[in-house]
Length: 112
Image (cartoon, rainbow, N blue to C red; front, side, top):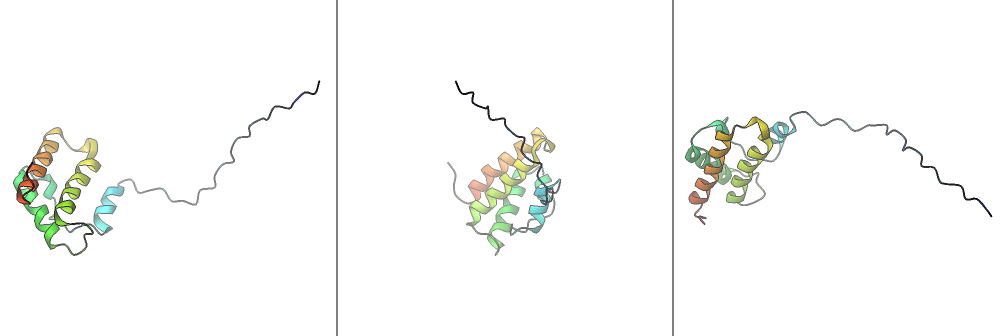
């Protein structure tokens, strides 16, 4: 009877990383340096959903750098801020942002 050698698994060699680590606040970098719309400073810190919606709508309509339509661009910016803010956004501010999305739908005539 012939004994088969069991194939021993070798540990993968350590990768020699040439890739740079992503910046800690990469979403801030995206907001500042991407082809995103130019937004009013600190608009998402506002407690007024109508003010947020109006400002984002104005920015979306004036922007020449957006790739999608104004409504989609405006909604995407609110969602981007809300999603990337994560645990740093209070529940109250998340509620304000959700209401601002409703207001944005009204401003664009897309009420459901």
